[in-house]
Length: 66
Image (cartoon, rainbow, N blue to C red):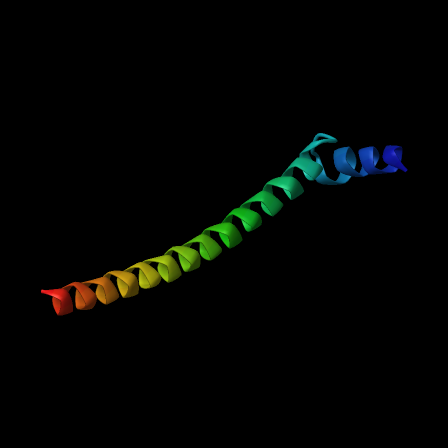
C-alpha cells in the first residue's frame, strides 16, 4: 500500500513521498490558525464590552457617592 502511494507520488504528481502529507498538514494548520484567530477576536470583543460595562457601572456608582 505504501509502495503504491510512493509510486503515485513520484510518477503522477512528481513529488517527494513526504510532500503530500506535509502539504495536507500545512493546509490543516492554516485552517486551525484562521479559526483560532476568528474565535480569539470574538472573545476579545466580548471581554472589552464586559470591561466597558464594568467601568461604566463603577463610574455611575462613584458619581453617586460624591
